[in-house]
Amino acid sequence: MTIAPGPFQFSEDPVAYRADGALVVRIPAKARGKEKLLSVLAAKLRFPTYFGHNWDALEECLRDLSWLGDQPRVVIVHEAFPFSSAGDALAIYQGILADAVVVHRQRGTPPLLEVVFPGPPIDNARRQR
Image (cartoon, rainbow, N blue to C red):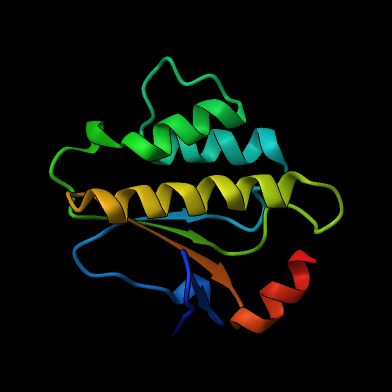
């Protein structure tokens, strides 16, 4: 695995990614599209019932995560990109994730949020253009 400067990590084999002592939330390759992605995240991260299944609600929940108790680390591992690079959904989603990672780092209290995407960082940077 390569740790990229910035909010994300990259793994050439995200299916095999392991993180001891962390809650690892796997986003399967079949979770494509906003509706499916938000449903998977809500279920696996046990979002509160008030979660609104939209980008604003996702941002709010990812910045909080207090309902997970004393979990030291939460790692969201994507087996594939949930959106194509066409359109703005991928950029919006990655922006929300990046913001949440930074908020948790700055806060300095558990849980620490980490996000893993597939592939080496250079491939993913090209994919986002």
